[in-house]
Length: 99
Image (tube, rainbow, N blue to C red):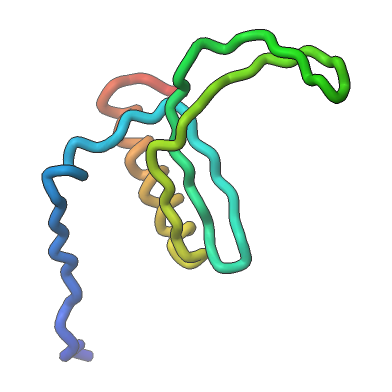
């Protein structure tokens, strides 16, 4: 059986401002009913011991700043997971690093 429908090909472009990317050394993933949110952040100062005034307990404060927030629909989460797995496998094969 011959498929007469043309193939979809994404033609991706990127602006010069976005092309450089943002450095992030922390990520947080959370969801709402409408989709998933990926917050990428950078630690802005060294962690330091702090005191919670309401409980009096000590904790380590890690100041961070979100550099990018990405919202994706639930259907795209599976595709993102597959792409990350493929790239991680390729990275491990190329570098010999397994994490």
